Amino acid sequence: MRKIPKTMSTQHPDNARVPEWAKSEVIEGDDEVVEAYYSYMNLGIHEVMWDAEGKDVDTHVVRKLLSLYTEYFKENIIGQDVFLTYRLPNPRIEGAERKVFAETMESIPVAYDLAEKFYGKKVIPVFEVILPFTTNYQELVSVAKYYEKAVAGEEDIELFEGIYVRDLVGEIYPKRIEVIPLIEDKDSLLRIREIVGGYYKVIKPSYMRVFIARSDPAMNYGMLSAVLLAKFAISALYKMKNELGIEIFPIIGVGSLPFRGHLSPKNYENVLKEYKGVYTFTIQSAFKYDYDEKEVKEAVQKINENKVEEPRVFDEHEESLLKKIVENYVSSYQPIIEALAPAINFIALNLPRRRARKLHISLFGYARSTGKVTLPRAISFVGAMYTLGIPPEIIGLSSLSKLSEEEWDFLKENYIMFSHDLNESGKYVNLDALEYLKEIWNIDNEVINKIKEDVKYAESIGIKIGGNDYESKKHVLLSSLALLACKEKKYDEMKEYIKEMALIRKSLG
Image (cartoon, rainbow, N blue to C red; front, side, top):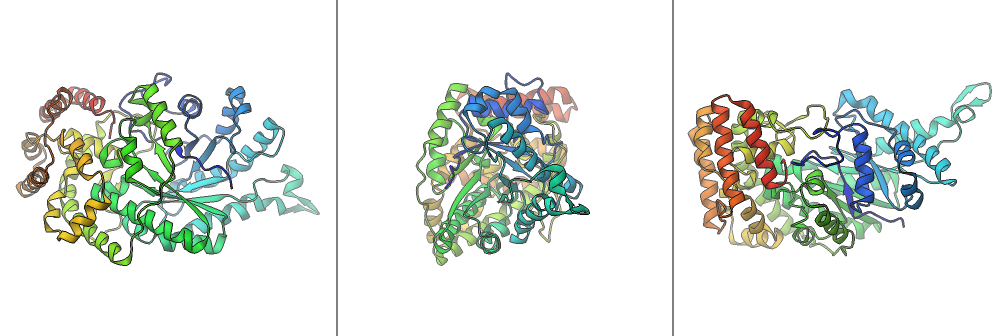
């Protein structure tokens, strides 16, 4: 069995601070190659996710790493000691990126040839790919088979009278790749057994890595729902592990703020307790660049040394309790977010950019039959909500007043850091901002009152609203200043306040 990494560096643009090695505020191009090396060498992260989704992908990353950092990679073999994993565009939903999908797949054998020459032996530097927005097993099978037949299999094509592709370009390795599903929406997370089981049945991999999203489900269904959906998915994967008799290694995509998973160098121990059963944790940009490097390295090392514990596995009754709590929460959370969409979208456009990315908006709630509101991606969404003085962690909380005693007990047992996460975000609530929402975006009184209800409910369950420390008080004041500047159309000033707030909370969103 190969070594499975515990930490995965990603290119999520959630950092408030710009790293010292970056040529500009927007990390792009060759800076991302530098970042990959920095993640391995300086921070001790075991795996780098190379993102081909939503940007101009550099498929020559292996060539650049080996030629720029020869000494390091002679000692640390890519694909054996450290890992590089491509995140593909999903050709089913990202029509304009279909050829990028093909180009990225075609680059895998090129990386193999380079590594073989560099190491003087057979080394497969890239052998796994991540497929975002996975909703069924057929998508995964299609990706695996595309590589097998259209990329590796092209060596057998006869070009002319006994001359084959392999005679022209040489043999193609690897012969197959592993596909990691990234599962992001509620229905798919609840059907994770079907997705993983279907893929296993057709492909028969020797092991599987399954990527559970944590940010997009929070944006679409609320933080509490996202935590419970992740727990459901982890439980289901552990059941399958025993049924299928194969090793399954869950990955979770967590950011620094509570809403997006709360994995920061300050809070990693709580996250390891919260997500028992998870093997690999994403180390996003805010984790890497908004904290002292020594603290980051120590936290990464501790996560790398983490002994994965068995998670709680739910029975049918517990699964139905979980689903009921989620549905109840979603029905309270979504209408508020839909109503705030104009404010969120406006603020999101004024957040500082940290990566060169094509503008990506997502349909809120995915394909729900009601409410076709578009919102920015999760990082910008969270950054906008904090700027508006309404940390999104708070939205929808009053729905918990409807829970039965059994449901409450289940929630407390299975979202261990519930109060801790809410207390962390409660510090940044700015109730004065609600007046600005009415004035600037004509947000309905009914919506404002629902937000007030959520805040009041948070206080009733012991959550402290508004911090006592200097930094959180300053954040609240800056939120009012940003909205005042917005009202007066002083947008340059507004942007400065937004940036300052991000630096205080050590994450853009």
